[in-house]
Length: 278
Ligand SMILES: Nc1ncnc2c1ncn2[C@@H]1O[C@H](COP(=O)(O)OP(=O)(O)OP(=O)(O)O)[C@@H](O)[C@H]1O
Image (cartoon, rainbow, N blue to C red; front, top):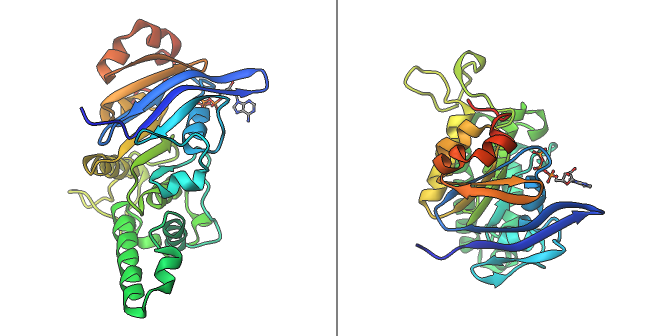
């Protein structure tokens, strides 16, 4: 088994008296897609906040390639390949979709930063072209060809979520944390009218966002990224994830393959009885 890329050991996060995350351990290996499920308030987003550096845990350590990054900033983590999307979108609404990706490339180091600015003009142009090609390829893969010039704030929720994903992966991630990525996305069928530039399936209809998302996540994992996703759609999680971790009241209630977790009576009692199972 390959070495973990990201490890969380004994993580604890409190809000005043509330133990939102309590002694949680988690290991992510390159190439795996891991689901994080649990009832509302279980601590999933709080754990994401700790892993991505937005919230400092009061207990525990977070390791990237075995090195302690617990005190590193969110920007440092993003630059080192730990990327996330948010439950409530955080796009730059007054920038175009293409510019949202451009800004992410600068933040994530793909722009070359000051080093690129100081290089001779031909080298700088090569950087610039490579960067634009990567952005165009990711926009295409995410079904966003037709909205590159559109202001991100004007997009419907599902497509804005795809832009968030595109922004997180425009420079290749090592760890990708997706917080409820399918919420607001079309699953396909009659609710999704054809529109120009989007990839079409065999029937000529555009490929639904959820299917695009699935294929992007699988491609990233095949290329060695570790993916952790929070999702209330249990059917989606069970289909996509090789491993599932169940949180309840801030603690890990169960962990295993999708089949193991589904069969666990404690998980059924705490969560699956009430969850969405498409
Ligand atoms: N900013 C905050 N201040 C105080 N308490 C908070 C805050 N954010 C979350 N909590 C509490 O921490 C606990 C964990 O919340 P969290 O949002 O991490 O759960 P979750 O599993 O992501 O829930 P959901 O599925 O509803 O998004 C809950 O009891 C919640 O009320």
